[in-house]
Length: 397
Image 1 (cartoon, rainbow, N blue to C red):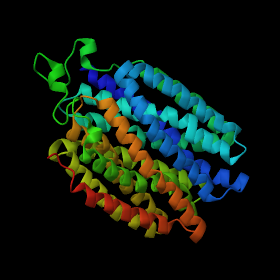
Image 2 (cartoon, rainbow, N blue to C red):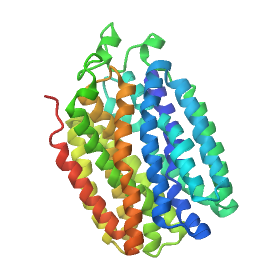
Image 3 (cartoon, rainbow, N blue to C red):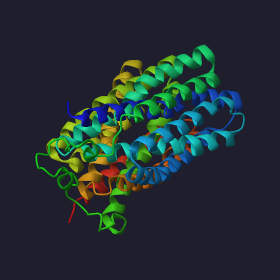
């Protein structure tokens, strides 16, 4: 087995623990509102601040991965993330929530994406789309595995102890998985997967902008980041509010956890399927298909009534929202290469986080004004379509 697939497996474990725990926030939402009486906008605002901080922290984490390697970067990030999550057990004021989601947890989460996709991009020339899609399955598989665990812990121990144990489990497993990460194949005397040339380094950097042509001075980079940020703006509405939305539709907490788990399962399917499609038709084209269908399904989900329809649509929504998320990295690499992959991914994540942070905040405010999440889901579908429109201009000149 090529060691690149070991790297993929380690990245998958990191993603499952990081994203699965972070987005279990949706299951704590009602408990926080019920115990403290905070408004939905105030609670959602904590996640918005977290997404901004997570994105901004992704840039230095990506640089650290380029400079020091992914192993120490991800290990330190895992410790910080585990601590931030565990401290959720002592929250008593709304600013505590902001300090954790916008502080410790966000810093740790910065090590869960940009260092990983940068490392995978260096290890794979062939089948890069599939490798990245598997490695980033954590965004979906994490929700699928961690949502039932979080709901079980909440039911058995209460939401405070649930936060404590999720921090211990996720932080520990992230640190363990980080021990298997290596920056590039040359460190092990290997070539990237799919490279037959004797000098794997020269081939592995691929096409796109070279290290001497900084991507930050390229207008295409800013357009790409805005396009992908709009995806996250709408996608974050789903990730943060899917559980309270189905509770609004008449589900109990167990039913809501099942919806979240099914959304996560669809997310996994979509990441693999769109990764395969990416290798066949290209990253940008795969992104367009994912984002367009996401808009249609989000409207259908908002209008649906009845358990069967919502269970089915949660899977379909997960497939295409998750499929679009994989293309954040594949589109970036396709347009700008891997010469400075860590810094590139970190910069993209920072801008995507800043743009996407408005989603939870806006949707929480919409609920406070209308007492329904349906208008927020319709607005999210419109943002998906705007992202699709902008993606038409994503091509290297």
